[in-house]
Image: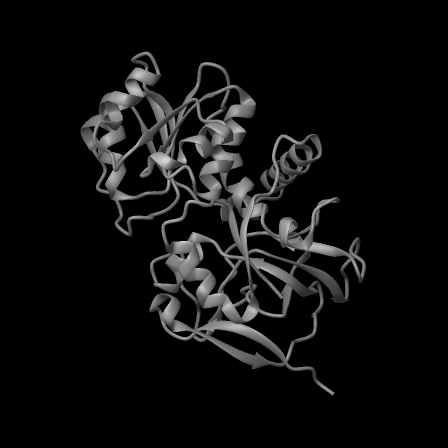
Amino acid sequence: MATTNREWVLTEYTGIGGLQLRDYVPQDAGPGEVRLNVEAFALNWGDMDLMQGRYSFNFSALPARVGCEAVGIVDQIGEGVTGIEIGERYCSLPYFYDMNGTSGDTVIREPRYLTKAPDGLSAVEAGSIWMQFMTAYYPIAELAQAGPGVNILVTAATSTAGRAALEIGSMKGATMIATSRYEHNRDYLIEGGANHAYFGTGEGLAEAVREATGGVGVHAVFDSVGAGMIGHYSKALAKNAQIFFYGTLDETLPELPMMELYQANATFKPYSLFHYIEDAAWKQKGLEFVYRALDSGQIAPTVDRVFPMEEYKEAWEYLRAPRKAHGKVMVEI
């Protein structure tokens, strides 16, 4: 007899209001697939953009599940899958998941979009780390080549990816400059690896960056804000600077400050982690970094709050409201 499960689906591109909780009958894992009994899944800002129809992809059809990051126990393995056993705990990796979101009791994935849950972490902790740390890893460690003498600006640095960028850049010895709207976040930013912190919405940011860098400017920017910040920090770009643009927290795409980009010979790069997950060699580099850094204690999961399945909408309301606490917001099943 079929078992009925629950899933949250988006019925229209109206944000949180478009979500509905419904029953469904789980599908079986097909050839080359693995099914997880989901223990927890994560909320990410990109999912909010997707729910409003302004992300890097839209769903093929509605209704559709939202979510790209989950953790669970393997309960079915399809024909041809090797190296994964029933009863093991795995985490899903972020990718262009279209109609295969994680906000349900089960999720089916190809093995290339799964990774073994790290030892010593709870299910909630294991499900919270991959989007956060891998989003930051590639621009900061690989592309910007964070290290001594490299100055990196992180906007909205109390976000989970922003915090990860500070931690990774600090590990590598770079000079890390963080922005936040609120002064009460100072201790959190400094703890996370910021050498300097700016508070506000952009006024005076270029001057603060030049002062923090001895007039050199920033060699890389990890920016999730959108139009509201680029016109301020662009006046403090070092020669050959790289801007990694990965979100629009202010909900407005930027108009590029071309004169400043010309003067610095700077590169503006729209950045998505998903492309690095799709490349096997890049994916492996990121996974190895996260496992090593966890084992050595250089990074650790930070979970702010856990909601039950029934309160998915409330979890989203909590995530998007101004918070004094920081870390991942998770739903536990």
